Length: 275
Length: 286
Image (cartoon, rainbow over the protein chains, first blue to last red):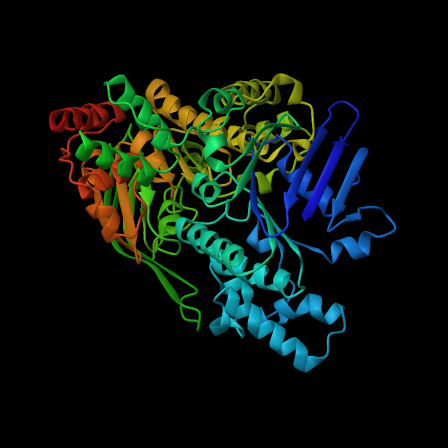
């Protein structure tokens, strides 16, 4: 089933420039899709349009088979959870527990049920030990994990990460990537993640590359990130494994294109023993 | 003349239950005219260390010598204003500090505040904005209308307009896309090469340290764990592993190749050299 379907979506912040220019794509239920593109390519705008935080100019958006309109905005929003970039801008509660509870309280969930949901979701992001801590004193990675737990507590079908790792230190980035991978493996959540991180892209099922408000490329991480010419055109970084493969080719050793170093080294070992 | 830290300590909230010793007896000499990376885990004391360079934080013990000035613990620093003109400090996420109505006014604010006449301040602002690569059609716009990367460049231009001798940048590329990162780092490299600025960069990104920096200072638990040349630091991944740092791609590739049985010389420091070595070995086995 298509969990997200976007048809001919167009949007502009002002009349001088079209930020999202007639894009169409769909995302299967339970899949993990990453959206890449340089700053200003329209990535975050797409996320905001999906969540109904911005109003489209034209086109259609369907989430869980339901069309996004002003009339069913509340229903649509209950399907979606978003984790934003800045871990400091999304806290409300004075403790981790209160923060995760915030959305549930707004929905008048009874106390015993609420406790169970909080505990379950804190465990999913490995923050059980910190339930009574102040969010402000946590590390960036921990803050983002709390934000994820708060969003999961609302039982969304679609989880959107809007550059959720870009402001974190390497350890924090790693924590969040692991949480996302685990959520993908263990649940039927549909995950959409906007990112610059090639390692995160490599762990997703599908990549959409945006450029100037249009879809420049779409496919598996391998398909998209081995298309060197196009990557350069849309100003994206070439994975190191691919750069190294090219350097090897210049020295007369031909290999397949890989996006991970591990993949490339494996092949080199094979060709080494086969020769 | 190098920048010198002698037995410098710093404690936050001293005498309260929140007392925290952020720097402990730091001795460090930073060469002028180089790009030095300051690395370490979150909370290790990197930012505390660099904020001593323009006396934004004062040492609790010890002294700091910088550009013919000495900042000594327990003494009121002299000529603070001129020091702050000479040592430009760019905080993390500096774009949150933009406040003027227009980009040009925001960048000209610093020099004006230091007594530069209006017209010259505007000239300097224009020059600084050109350096960071912001198009002139944005000069009269509100800084709040710009994208995140553009705002960051405006904030850095605000410091460059002061024409500091030493430039200290606290995670200048955090949150930027790959292209934004490259253009930012190239700018610092150019400022160092062509205008001989001494540059200190606090960063978590080892690719940047490897590619753009001369020296690396590792801060751990408020102490200097290591200070050495970048080439030495990355001769293999042992330092990185010890310090729980993800090494740059090239070093990770060298490691993976070694684990797979290739012989890789420590001195290889570029992708073509590594490819030559691997290609030779693959062909030999053939």
